[in-house]
Image (cartoon, rainbow, N blue to C red; front, side, top):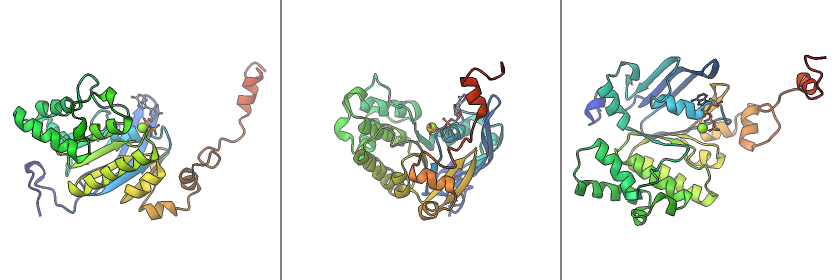
Length: 281
Ligand SMILES: Nc1ncnc2c1ncn2[C@@H]1O[C@H](COP(=O)(O)OP(=O)(O)OP(=O)(O)O)[C@@H](O)[C@H]1O
Ligand SMILES: [Mg+2]
């Protein structure tokens, strides 16, 4: 059955909304992603796990066009993004929402104005309609009571939810979340997790969630992907990942400081350098 949206009418509902094939990204001579493959199906929640600095945020940046890959393919709603004309890309891009890792709200605007701004920029709605949409989106994340507050007047968890409401303004079909739980206490985090899961179901939205919080990941994921060394080391359901035999994944899940992920071996150069006997010896 085709979608009602004009721009993805060629896509079947059993095809991935988003597909990454053999994606390579480098910064200078540092290779960050070395051939990542990933599929996101309609209404699916996929969680990306992986150590700090392994390239999770970089992958999301490549998806929204903020970083240019060296090679590989990104297919969004069935089309290769490289083949899209600028106008088409802008339209596709509005259907891809993102909740950034660091900050997101405009600090000089109230919560209401933060959302209204997006709608004024990207839609032809009048002010009355904008007010209705803003309140609907705030209600979805339980933040309607805070519409007149400034970002500095609300807690971190509330800011996350307000930023989420803003990302929902243009009715995305895919939401990208970068560390939605960062800086939140376990109870607030559970609230944000529930928001992510409920929104996915109610709005039939696919979600790609980057997180370090294992409990949260196991709760919200339909499927999980473990990135390591710029590649997908493992992929599976939460149960499959939790029971995965790779010791690197087990170390990560258990949060152990020592193990194969952190083994560096004896480094004689380091000792020599400390003792001033390196090259000068
Ligand atoms: N714009 C950039 N220019 C140069 N190097 C960058 C840039 N963005 C990221 N990097 C480097 O790429 C690597 C991956 O960064 P990235 O932010 O994607 O990691 P991450 O997996 O999201 O980590 P974290 O879990 O800490 O958020 C890091 O070593 C980082 O220093
Ligand atoms: Mg990151």
